[in-house]
Length: 74
Image (cartoon, rainbow, N blue to C red):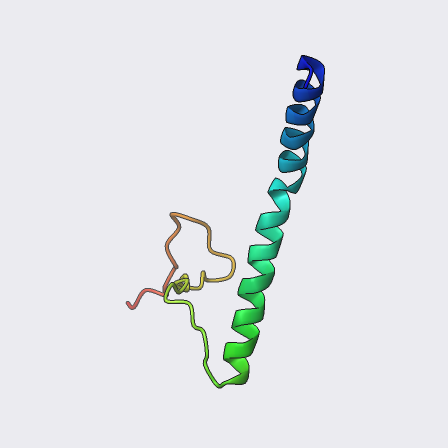
């Protein structure tokens, strides 16, 4: 084989590998989604162990650093 034919084959092979590189992520995501779907059909549930803590509600009309004025007793 000539040098140019080998070089062309190598470049073509590298190009095909690089084009298909992203497809593996899509295929893996699809397989995971299908597995989750089938597990859900069998009655398994998935729950995230991480929960967002709720922040305390701010009083309306109150700005940061202000205190609420209470009527003073005399």
